[in-house]
Length: 140
Image (cartoon, rainbow, N blue to C red; front, side, top):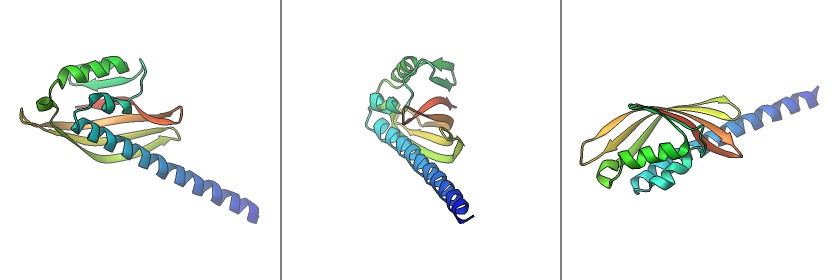
């Protein structure tokens, strides 16, 4: 009986530790994206996204599919430092949906000389090949 209780306790502890570690990794990924954006480095910012044709970005102009198309969209819409401004993320919810899937809901704000903008986002992140990446981004 003691062995069963010990095994259950170890399993629960390791699961909680993994969840805490994964959440911290995801928070770090989003912090790095914010820092990369604020350095004007869209290429580095995009490293948080899944480099797949199945990546989905949903914005005010509709759905964009694929990493390359999403990158091109960012480069077109934010083609100057004035348009990029300074990005601030505020995470509202970081929820584990499965062992390899998280949903993040947050606010974004761009402080810019050409006019501030902001809104809400919902991200789906998956752990693929040992790395957490954004597989779906719905930003409004």
